[in-house]
Structure formats: C-alpha cells, structure tokens
Image (tube, rainbow, N blue to C red):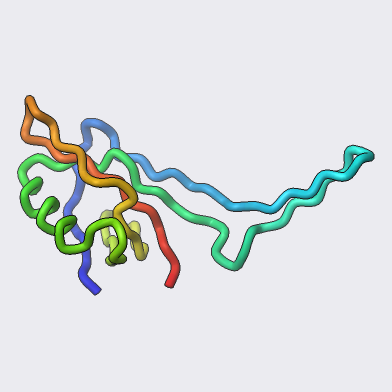
Length: 106
C-alpha cells in the first residue's frame, strides 16, 4: 500500500474532523438508548489539505488511487488508512490544490 507523506500548507489551516456513527432508539417516555454503530464507529476526515509546490505530485497520486483505492496517510504524527473522499480542487488564480481524505477500515 502506498504512503502519502506530503505536508499541507498552513494557510488555509488543515483540519481533522472526528465523527462517531451511533445508533439511537427513542422510547415514548423520553428515554433513549444510544450505542456505537459497529466496531469502527469512530472515523476521522482530513479536510483543507492544500498543496502548492507539490501539487503536481499530489494530483498524480490522486490519479493513481481515485476515490476508491485506500492508501496510508503519515503526516505529522497522524497515521491512518484513508481514501480520497472528494476529487481534488485546483485554484485557477494560484497554483494550489486542495484535497479531502476519509479514514477507512479494512
């Protein structure tokens, strides 16, 4: 599995969004029961990862993997198996490329 190691620019600030899938059941008396939805309910989404100098290499990496093929992410202490969740966005006025990745479990 290929490793993605390009560090994003700091402007705009890259973000990591944490989410947990849950199952909820509400009962008529106001009581509700909540539990995790599966073994890997907690996932991370890596957003606003923007590249300038390495944009062509990152785009080539996307072209090899598309939105369906997983790869390893290893950036600044964050390690995960991820896939691209959206196609890269290129700026028309500046040489910048922005990507978004979603954690997957295999």
